[in-house]
Image (tube, rainbow, N blue to C red; front, side, top):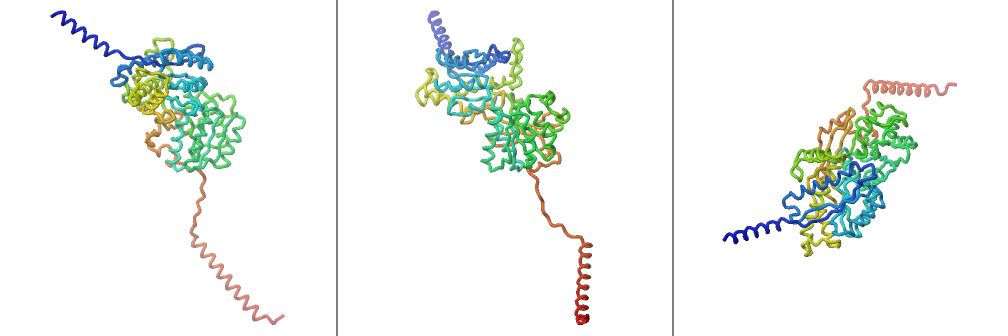
Amino acid sequence: MDLLMFYIVLTVTNTDVIKCERVPLYVGALFELSEHWWASYTNFFPTIVEEAFEDILNHSNLLDDFELRLVVKDTKGLNGYAAKLMTDLLQEDPPKVAILGPSLSDELTITGQIAPFYNVLELSYVATTASTADKKLFPTLFSINQVSSALNPLRIKMMKHFGWTRVGTISFQTDMSVKQMTDFHELVAANEFSLITSAVVTDTSNIKDVIARFLQFDVRIIMGAFRSSKAPAILCEAYKQGLYGHSYVWIITGTLMYPNWLQNADLDDIDCTREELFTVCENYFSLDYDKVTESTSPTINGKSASATMDELQALCDETENKLTSYAGWIYDTAWSLALGLNNSIHHLAERNITLHDYNYTTDYLECIVEGMREVTFSGLSGHVSFDDSGFRVGETFIRQRVNGTLRDVAVFDPITDQLTWVIPESSIWLDGEAPADHFTYDESLAPASNIAVGCILTMLSCGFILSIAFLVFNTYYRKQR
């Protein structure tokens, strides 16, 4: 009897062990771990991903039969080497369900074109480059980080809300800035607004003519996309020519600006004082998206974003590395992948295949891509979802510079097309109303003064009587010479 009981207990225990075993799904990662200035940050990236994988493992009803495992390669920040490591990851066993990274835009431009040939998903968490917008070249790329062009729907929403139809744009000659404004111009045309003038600044020597042209064409609403290193020269010229104040609205891409850029601006090459820059910058609007949400609500891992960030900071403090401000995007990348793979399971079942037998075939890729497009969750960086092109869709924000600091003004949800004001809308304008987008001529009839009318009628009457008198006089004495 004892032997039988032992056999039964052993059988049940072994069954539980087998039931708890998970099939590993391998995820490749391309990080710049050495020989690059960002290595002090990127060396902590694997820890961020592993922490996310651990939270995913403990989450119920998510990849219950599987476990995500990371395989890391060091690109050293070299484009060609990143391409080699990409092919190494994909040719080495076991097969990788996805590739994370690389972090640098030039690297991503190369690896992103390799991924489709292996029918593998690639996830970007920080690189920002306009070239990846071409889905013919990058059909398997999903971006967890928001790109600057994601701010354009907010620009259009502001124009509609305030009744503006005329706009001008200034961008500096960089990949992302020009792409952002080019996309905005298409939206302007689609909404039947008027693009009055557009300038691409190649160097600071031609800024004077750019600002003069804006004044010449009476452009009052100005959209800007330039980095904080170029902002002092552009805004200094705006100050000198008077393109600022309550009649003008500057709306710039805040994601291109460093924090405290104005306080730390280099004034050596411009003819303005810091006080004059503060004057021209007062009340400008900054369009932004958050790397880490300020919401205190629980995220998908059951904790608030700040609590998770504190945990990551504590882990980072135990090392010689630094915690990047992009940590929220990196963490959310792991969750996006897990949810996308989980969503793909029922698509795979429709084709009579499973993730257990994953390989680099179009069937697996199509199902995983379809699963990624269905992803929606609350992450460290806010709400995460993707459009049909694989770009992140999330909330964007309007902030305004007042008394030297940025304050939150409104939140825009592109999914619902809803603009929610954080402060009273009238408080953002000096006189309580939004300025017009052009000078208007108001023609009206002014009533004449009664005294003036009386004087004119008296003079006309006197003139009439005098003319009759002269006529009678001339008629009566017409025969006298």
